[in-house]
Image (cartoon, rainbow, N blue to C red):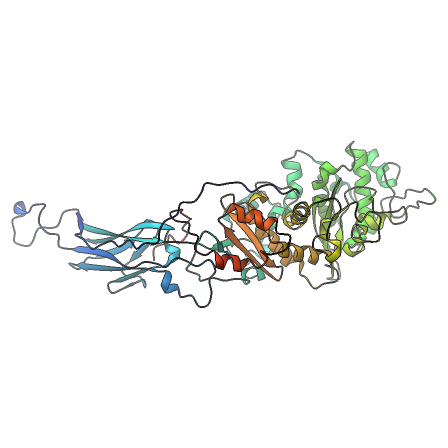
Length: 552
């Protein structure tokens, strides 16, 4: 994937942090005050003073919010505090900025002091209205307060339901218990504990629904047919273990038609072999299941599609092979496959959970006769364990001709003879980002960049997966965060740290995103330091969504 220049957005307005204090004034009157007992109501005029009054003034403006929350911070510094006084014993009183309403019986209203949390305020200057009511008389007064947020700040990733996505799952999933089978709602995960700011800040919260986001990947298989009007994947999967009545499909299974040999064939004796369904169906490992299945798919494509395995359709391989294993294997194997661009053709990775509880990560070749293979190693190189791939073997002739993205950051083997650093980084980034979806939509990498150190660690974890103690689900969940950020077209983002301590941040300056992308020396790897050094950036009057709109 080539790096595209980040999109440019309108320059944000800046607002000074001067204190704007609303002075207590005369309450405004609405409604009609009841006549005093024993008086002649006709003698009452609009100039008569109301029986109730309310006044509000700003006691304390919030300090500018920090770009990184630390244990030394106190939430009290970032609260707005108002003095609210009433007379005439109103039956109702409240303070509101239009998004949140604080009533007199709230814990935030103490005597004549009303406290507003930073998460209950919009960014920038805003008006707070104090109202009091008794019978049909309502009086009001206003004061001003301002909330200043940094333009660049660290994100606190927290669990949050994605209701539109959950609704799509409910409507489209063939599984009645899809979300329940995936934990319903995941509230605890390492991605939620790597950094935590105060719960009342709100502006720096990134809500993510890990369970629902499984759907983006799992729905690839259905999307191939519904959106692309291409039944190839489904027809192939349905043909496994079934007599379709189609003589061409039977000829493919028998080895009479196709472009490549099966594992039970013999290259030296020029016997093609055949699709061994029983071997596939009873395989207890991912690699064992792929041995016969992968060859069958290449031959099926060559005969049934007319075009055969071609690089323009690399995105088809991942969901098709994955679903074939999960639907047709009898040993309850679990698979997760995704594709990315290698060079002149595609490539991919496929992860599997085996029958005995072990797991493995393999290269997923998308051409029937890999350039890394000899006739004797043809089947092994179609889906080798990552560490056994000749793409990652420095002694192999094709090692430098085809620079595999998992080489990114690999000591003396990282550099390509074909690509510049930014091209290498773009291809490596696709390996991580594409874990969430093969049929990709509505997202762009223009506004997201990983630091060099983070991406090097991610690719290393994949390159050495079968020898290290990395957890695939944790890597996958970090890819979900990237997917979430790529769907936000309004903000620039950086992901940084490492896979054991992933971090992400919003970045105001487009140029910084470019510099992070081009950072071959890793000077931005400690991105917290950049945020600390640039905490004076302010979003001014730019508004953000306020979600704490409940009455308190």
